[in-house]
Image 1 (tube, rainbow, N blue to C red):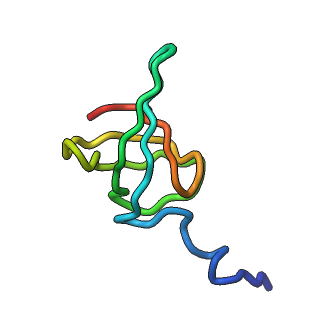
Image 2 (image 1 turned 180 degrees about the horizontal axis):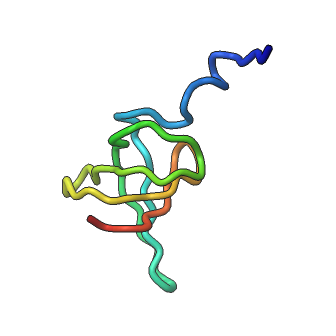
Length: 73
């Protein structure tokens, strides 16, 4: 048998979670608030909606509070 705690069995980020989205281009680094459009664990790519513009982006979760943008949709 495998015993998992409730926390271990849940996603690191759930739909609607507020995340700091980071866009890195050469030496420029920009961040913006975004909201998760699904559930995911750290290291996975997920879609987010940028709070200020409504734009949808794909980003790789770096932690439970930040993600690196990999594609702008």
